[in-house]
Structures are given as C-alpha cells and as structure tokens.
Length: 404
Image 1 (cartoon, rainbow, N blue to C red):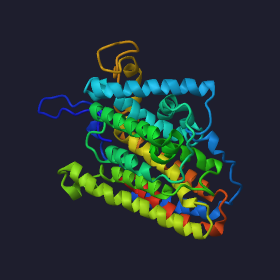
Image 2 (tube, rainbow, N blue to C red):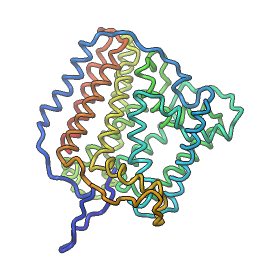
Image 3 (cartoon, rainbow, N blue to C red):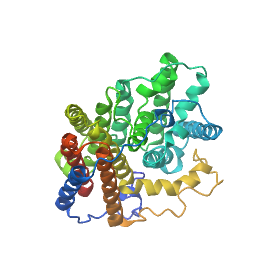
Image 4 (cartoon, helix red, strand yellow):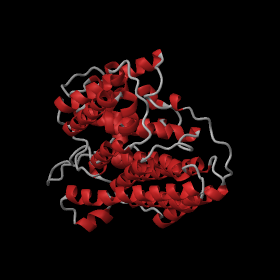
C-alpha cells in the first residue's frame, strides 16, 4: 500500500514528517538474513518431531457454520455497523486520507490485526460482517459448504492487486468502491446460491482467515477444497510482489515510470509463480501423504507478509494513532467527539532501523510458526516438498523486506 500523505518538497516548503517521506537506508546483512531464514525453516522441517495434530472442528472455525451465540451476534452487529460506516465514509466522506475512517480502519488496522489474531483465535467467526448481513437476508438458508474455492480467486486477486500494485490504495474513494464491490459480490452470490455455499467458495477474506485459524488446530490435513493451493499461492505471490515493487531494485528496473502498468505486468507472473509453486508442492506432497504440509505452512507465512506490507512506511502505526479521532469523526466533518485525528501524530515512532528490524523479526517468527505447523502431524519422510518450497518462500520474503 502506498503512502498516507504527499510530502512538500518545493523550495522553501516544510518537509512533513509523514510516512511518505521514506527513511534513510539502514544497513542490514541481507545475504546472511536471507540464507539464514531458508536454513532455519529447512532445519526445523527436518528436525522437529511430528507430534500429534490438534482436533479440528470446522463448525467452531468457519464463520458460515452453525448458529451464533448472543455474544457473537453482538460483535457481528458492531462489525456490520463498522462496515457500513467505513463504506459510507469512503464513498462520501472527506477525500483526505488522514481525515477519513475507511483507509485507516480497513487497510491500516483491521487487515493486519485480524490476520494476526486469526492464528490463535477463531476471530472471523466472531467478526464476519458479510455473513452477519447474509444471515439477515437468508434466515432459513439450507445450502451446504462447497468443496472448491475457485470463485474466490476473482475477489482475492482484485484485493491483492489493489493492495500491492495500485498507486493509491489508501484513497478513501477507492477504498469505498472496493468495499461496495466486495459487499455486492458477496451478498448477491449468497442470494443466488445460498449463504453457506457462496461464503465457503467465493469470499476470500473469510476463507483465508478461517484457514489461518484452522491449520494450528489440524485443519486442511485430510480434506482441502479444490483450488486451495492456487488461492493461497496467488495471494502470497502477489503480496510478495508488493514488497518487490517498493524496492529500489524494481524502480531502477522500470525507470520509475507508469507504476500502474509496470506493477500490473510484474504482479501477474508473481501471482502465477506463487500459485504454481504451491500447486506443485501440494501435488508432490500428496504422493508422499504429507497431508498438505506445504499449504499449511504457507498460511502463517502469508500472515507474516501481510504484517510486513502493512507496517511498511509506518502505515500501521500511523493508522493506530489516527483511529481514535477518526472513530469520532469518520467522515472528516470536523467533529471532535474523541479528539482530533492526527493530533500529536508521531510519523515514525520506531525510527527507520526499529521499523525495519520489527518487520524482519515478525516475519521470522511467522516463518518459524509455518515450519512448526507444516511439521506437526507430518512424518519426516513425507516433508520433502515442504523442505524445498517453504525455505524458498521464506528466504524470498526476508530478502524483499531486507531490501526495503
């Protein structure tokens, strides 16, 4: 995701200390970190004993399954209100990114926070606003969950392209349009084929977050929907291109011209390569009966990549500081219910070096988590595909962050 503000650089103007201003280069041992990450993941995959896989109950993870407790209904109601307010703010509120709730809430905080929480809690089962709306529209839904997720590729690639390639993904109007399109896609599909069926095959946010929650509990081992490896691999490859596209290596290659066209041209093969790698690894691992070890290990890595993308250029820390004021003034109308948005904003609270090392540490921890998830319940002799694919993906991820 690009920047939150434009920096004044005209002669005599004051350079604003906002995330867009970039940071001085921080020297890091790039080769050491890259090789070390690959070796660490490979070592864990080779050394960690299989152990016992957790007990997986899809009804306790997937947002579309089963009924809802009173507590979940309350949280779902708040989430629906948040979705509607963010959508309206994006479409009709202030066009200034710092004065509009939609960018800070949707892409700045909700995306990384929900992704991280999903590793330890079935958070999407509590939050899912689209399932909440669909349950109101279809109270007697009797459809059954699908066994394939191919339709989810369409919105998944659209969202990933928007976050990784588009030069203005934090533009409130574009965020509002994206939310409206996704909501229309989701609710229209639920009305056409049924809530459970459509959400389980075509709503990628809920699908991926449910899988992130499922894999530490033994999910995606014996039954994996058709297209699962393609979906995870394409999103992971696309987000990794988002990291590459913001390095000097890429800008030097493209000359910094026509970022949207060059970005789209780079995004497509990266998404295809990511999907192809996971499909090959999952297929080869299937012959060894590894129970989807590569796919399961890639999901914590995907969370790590989401975190480092969101943390880039202090977007997450800036959004956190803006959020309290924006909740009191979501449309940027000058209300002061919870304080002024951006008042006392520290654009770089961690400094350039601190932010870079935080991103590398978080990514390293999620790489370790991915290796442990892949090894869990998988005999060592069946981990060949994971030992090749996951260290490679981990090394590439660390390299792209280290290039900053």
